[in-house]
Amino acid sequence: MDDTQLLRYSRQILLPRIGTEGQQTLLDSRVLVIGAGGLGSPAALYMAAAGIGHLVIADDDCVDLSNLQRQILHHHTDIGKPKVDSAKHTLNALNPDIDVTSLPSRLQGEALTTQVSQADLVVDASDNFDTRFAVNRACVETATPLVSGAAIRMEGQVSVFLPKDPDSPCYRCLYREGDDPEQTCADNGVLSPIVGIIGSIQALEAIKVLLNLGDTLCGRLLVFDGLYHEWRSMKLHRDPACPVCGDHKP
Image (cartoon, rainbow, N blue to C red; front, top):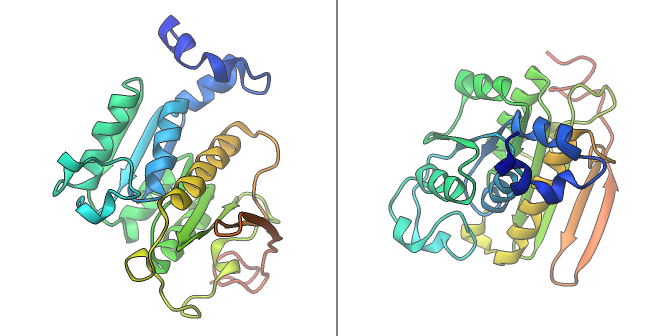
């Protein structure tokens, strides 16, 4: 690190569990962020500010006026632009020290697996179950850590899945495909600070996993009720019969 980097990240470097070695680990890390919306915005901003050296942002959508209430990566002048272009501009303006790769597409199949395999960690900030299940499968197949978040109305949840840990569940252990009706913010609404809280926790968990700090949310589901400001932590167990990570997976 040069003198400018030492000053930029000095408050983190002061932390005994991080120091210059940990900061260098962050600078050498590559994180794939799926979604540049309500969750991806705060998650990417805090990871960029913290000095994660390479952020890959994947999203196939364009900025709409209705996004600006909560998607803080984007500005009014970005309406109509691809979200990944707006995100790259904002993140590089915040921290020109990092690399930002923009992927203006919905990652699927081999393209998804390739990007996941190249990442040190994946932050799933998507807004639909199909994408979450696909990302989870790719992370299990490539043994890539996954930080998953969701938010709707005045509620949110976060968990961490570590495929290299034999005791870690995966996202498919938590939800069965087709069991729950799809719920979106467009249909149900969401209060803007809720996605800020959940996305920030996703950034925190990503940094902790990359640096092997403390206890992560692996094996736990953290649930936040913003209306009554209540937090719940529920234990998650690996399902031996899970078709993705179970003992007899295909």
